[in-house]
Image (tube, rainbow over the protein chains, first blue to last red):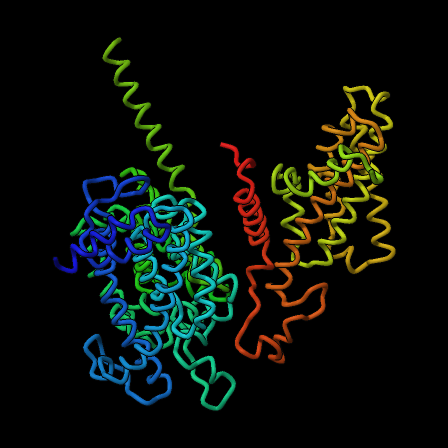
Length: 402
Length: 214
């Protein structure tokens, strides 16, 4: 009798206890489940929810580790203690000191995100008597990656409770939610505590406490600076691509996000249609704005000039549109389900993201708002795609019979 | 036996709980979203609706046999409008600041679905005393929800109750603000009122399963 069969017997013996979903959740997480996903969830293939979720998490881990190094790097760089790293493999980037600071700041975010979120899931699983679904594993990983590094932990905890309850549990749990829970959490944080989610002080660890003192350091993001017509702060294209810039914890490195995207596409967990169409949407909006600038309709005095005049392809590496396209828009629960619908859904996300970015200088990062908006419309898009398909096939039947 | 018979008392208590105009009938939501950021405004709005609905129900009930049914909506509108104008003028005279906060929403009591709903559903078919009780009951049911929502929104959004700081000073960092607490700006936005009303509905329905309709 090994530990594994002991645990299994234990599970069988306590089948009708109230707390058994909580035990099952931990059991399934550590060992191979003896059953596959069933019931109202969103995986519609001979596949297991656990594999899907673990694949996404694997794709996110590089971003998380990079985020830890970057947090420390930005912290020391802003104080002038280290030289700026030249490129992705720069000597002053991958240092132990950077990692320790990052670990110290980012790990609590991860722990709070998982701890609070899973606690809420467990409570609901016990009250409602269903199993704990693996859905929160991805959300819990995404949340630390899309918040500023200095966000107070209690705020994160409140937001996670709100996001999991209002964004997911009220709709019936994993697979039933309309809105992406991770983005619901970010939206809550943004509207509830805007001073901690935007501006030029929150993106670099230590900048908030130093504000107003002689040691003050700036941690403006490129997007924030562009929105105020201040240029790109001396960062060049490659800095943005490799991700050694201030920003939310895990969204800065476009390079690692692209690797993650390829991994998701290769394993067929993420929809390449959504990713590609989101990027196409963003590029088209960028082209339109470039056209407006070239036609001379908007002059340099306009407050929109800074972001409108950004070359259209650079919109993809500024801000977090790429992160949103790869990890957020592709969420299989909240995205459109039909293939044609996915193209429309993704295109509109990209299109609206850039529109919000340009026209809302107070808050240039419109990606999460665009995705949440399209989450709401995804079922409608599907409905019309299916209806159009039915109509087309009906016509075909009529032609045949006539 | 007290002042009210059991049946009459039900007219008042029902709308407070299992037949609440906001959480069960889901009427009058617009004003519940718009003006509940402050407790004071919620309270005044509740009183205003209490006045309009209490008196309006009696007036309509008295006239119920002489109103031609083809033009009854117009007649009802005239009654509400006159009562709302009285409320509006009184507020402007004695509580000008508050009247500015409530702005158009006092005027919009006219379009509050609860009022027309009670006129149509109750006052047109019942006597004045019963109609009065029904009006008071529904207005109280409305006011209770407004006050609950207003309480949470003002407490968590601004850290005050009736304008009096109860959680300390956010600028001087006293009270709970000294340990890093901050006001929740989301609470001051209308969507949060919708979510709080939703939570109240959720709690109410999970306590009384009969209210859940399929």
